Length: 488
Image 1 (cartoon, rainbow, N blue to C red):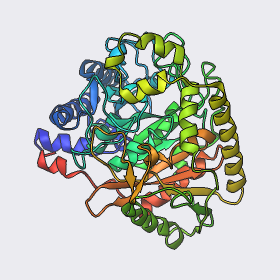
Image 2 (cartoon, rainbow, N blue to C red):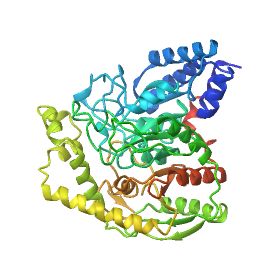
Image 3 (tube, rainbow, N blue to C red):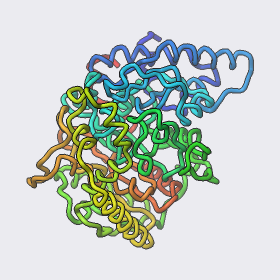
């Protein structure tokens, strides 16, 4: 078999298969690492997924896995499996630029908790994936690096803020990647890139130093909103990673006890009889007609094929929650620290971020937003008392051109350029588990995501329903045409 054929075989495998093949020595960790690094080299000029590739780090980690296997020493469940780490997540001795000139040379002196856990499980870090500046956007451009492109159409955004993570997994450079999600940033690129991504319940995956270290003003943000989670081509791969990165840690005051079930096993559980609410538009949102069509067709699978009861229903909160969400982002932001480090560099900062940080916020704006959040949470728990799950589109629009924050016209209606994110941020306000799952494609061949929101702390049911839908409507065999054009 040629090197290219072997590379393609490896790069189109899921993480579970790669881990098994390395442990049975069908492939060495070094062979897998070299295959994905070669793939990265071919794809990067087109997709710009990795802002900081780490080939030397990857080769050293793979060599250690192979050494342990050769000596019969125990290895972790992810031994030799390649992974990309979002560039908002701290990596010891590896640049963490966060898409900002203010941190262009920043090298953390400690790993994020999830990175510690991934390393302990034997995962091989192949690089840092691109983000918008400090993650304050749902797209993938910043002032430092090349703009990340959507592999399904290079003129379009891959979504954000886990932009590079989405593009890398969609092209098989790694079977999965770490994303973070303060208002949808795992689910947004998953929807735009045809992937599965899950934001587990608030506190299920401990965070540190991101959101919690006063030494880094740009990093120390979004504490009451942020989650870290997996993005993958299959539901089981995300569940496998969750099993590694989930669990409490004293460095995160919001972290919660570990689940008492196996995440991968949860993806195989029966879902017959579940009660599902389906909201096509929250009762007020503009939604692209192709999104409505694709998601509605996907929702029918739950009733026709999976034995669930589906009812159209809306939780009933106000249409102005989006503005209050961004106020809460500002409230979570270290405004004093950000203003201090931005002073004198204003011309090098993303305009939308500069506007948010420099705006003269008032205490009443913050307290009003907190009050609105409480109202939304109360409406949600009352609504969810009648349903096991809530399903929506993940996003209001298909992928759109790069270098814009979002479309201002949706379904013929003028709006704000963040209105396309209306479905994702409510689960960050409530802390509920939420996943984006591939629902299908537009008539132009662009991926559309369906969002699954679970009850408070009920990650298990979200995983079970995700797995059941994947078995009914599999998608992992579908790849962007870009790969064929490049011989991958």
